[in-house]
Image (cartoon, rainbow, N blue to C red; front, side):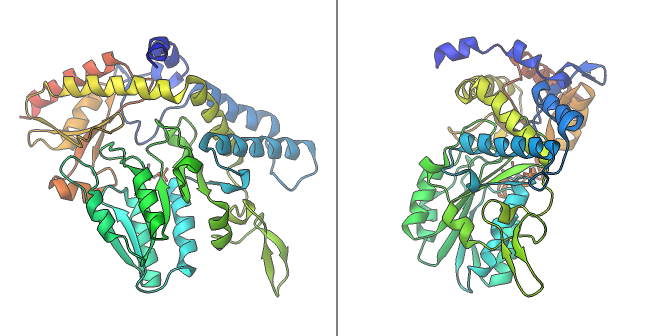
Length: 410
Ligand SMILES: *Cc1c(COP(=O)(O)O)cnc(C)c1O
């Protein structure tokens, strides 16, 4: 591991990302909004350009050469996703429009599997996209939503989770990593305990996948979802991994082309997996580019990525805490390179505006996780989220910019 860190040449990696060469407001861009979306390396941009320049065609239906080339490339991309997540079968990989879409496929499917009085457990650390679909599912079915609470550090209170579990629990939904705080949740324990009462578990991996290579079989996750755009891929594409038995149990989400076997006006039978969940023309180019993004990140290696990002996190935490009045939210020992903070009582939005003038992109607000902000009794935070292409010099630039913002605003 130590050797790999030494071999990690961030300046060389930065050359792979055209956008990192640009300026914002006359200053070199410092991009610290990686938890919202990651930047795109040239190889992924090339995959997109190459698709539209040379073999753009609809898939699975044509006998002509272009359609076959596009179909092959799309199915190879599915296999890359399968290998990356270590799914047992390629047909357990449903290519979707992203995490939100993937979650909604599962939430919608469970409508016919739940009855009044059944229970669904979510965590206090969830993104809105992992709360609202379950609330809607509860409204449709009469199921009851229970919440695993969090503590001051931003970690889940597992004793309460154990107490919430019972034979009434049918589903548990937890993110692998919190987007607002960066906490890495103990999903191994959460999954094992849910299975002990017969509940299925969906893991939202949108925020873990940029840093951790998940093994869905080792985790024994029933469902695992992620978005390509947080992993150096394009927007509008993502993955729903589901265990084969669960994907057979769930009804299709949308009706349309591609997802059928036989259609008559009397009765339609559905296609097998994965097509049952892929109605209509998919994001063909996006899927192919997702595969290219996984190739790119795997070539660098997730162990190197995680080790380098941890170094950035440690450095940034030390440097930011030098600023008087700066408070960090989410201080778990297990977290990814995300720092949520406020300075004195200054509104995060005002700080964000000033640092943007200095070319630095951070996110301000509730980060689609209002319940977490309510817990801390704050309107929002400033969030700096780091990626393997960021540098310590950029962190220094952030600290200088924050000091300037503090002076101007207090
Ligand atoms: C970004 C994110 C989502 C939503 O992903 P989309 O790509 O917008 O569908 C869900 N959960 C977490 C933890 C996220 O970080």
